[in-house]
Amino acid sequence: MEFVCSTLSLLSLIAGLSSGDDGWSMNVHPEVRAMQGYPVVLPCTFSHPQHSQHSSLQVLWRLGHGQGATVLYRCTSRAGAPTCEPGPQQDQRYRLEGNPREHDLSLRINSATLQDSGRYYCRVEVQGKEHISFEDKMGTRLRVEAPPKILALSVEGTEQSGYRALCRVQGSPLPDVQWLGPDDLLEEGSLLGPLAQGSPVHYHTVSQLRDVEPGQQYTCSTSNPLGKEQATLYVLPPRPPLSVAAASPPLLLLLSVSVGAKVLLLVGMGVWMVQDGAPQGASCWSK
Image 1 (cartoon, rainbow, N blue to C red):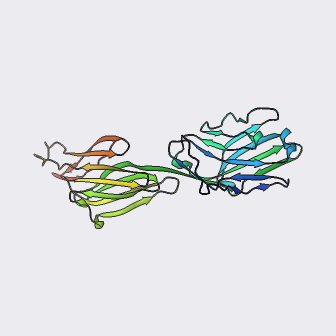
Image 2 (cartoon, rainbow, N blue to C red):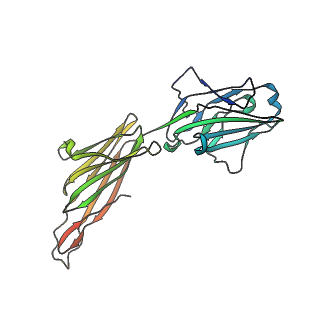
Image 3 (spheres, helix red, strand yellow):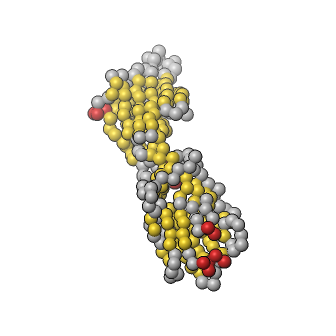
């Protein structure tokens, strides 16, 4: 299944930068949308003078523009050869979908990830007697979208300072986060909002909930237009120690259930540190 969605369904953006040869044009989509995990094709076609048909062509695709650009794909189409041959170190996730001899430089990206989002530029070079290059200068913006995913759910803090629950989520568009407690939807005063919002490359955020009490359960619910996922945290109160010397460390149980395309059961364990007969802190993790 492939995704090629343009904000202009019938129109392509025509833009280019030539080294001085007339008769060139290049057609690209200003924006393409893709779904995480699926292949996507970035269309790019061009026209050029007929004399270049007998020349060697080099095709380049870059992510970004200027000195910070990254060359993602490079191949050479030699005169008389049926294919455009990439270099030996070429990342196999990228493949030329089109045929340069048919004026098609379209690039295929397999298993698109959120990190693939960005602006892409296609370029063709004619390596004849006169080295001629032509490049799209507007670029194609790739938007990779993904349903919400809860990456981690944990508890931090001490008995003196109080405990808080942390919920780290990822998705594109960036998901909304709500907390549900023993009395259903918690008040806004308990929800501090995102601690850190990821850059467009990461698409993640962390939400924290204050005043988490042992013996209660709390649910992190996250959603965006592509779906919804939630996980529930159960905090078990510790048993009172028999004595300072003989007390066995009490346990903090973290049970996280993700509800979405799949059901996942995560069990973690936390240990309360005991000093001078009083519990000092707790930590937990999931795996």
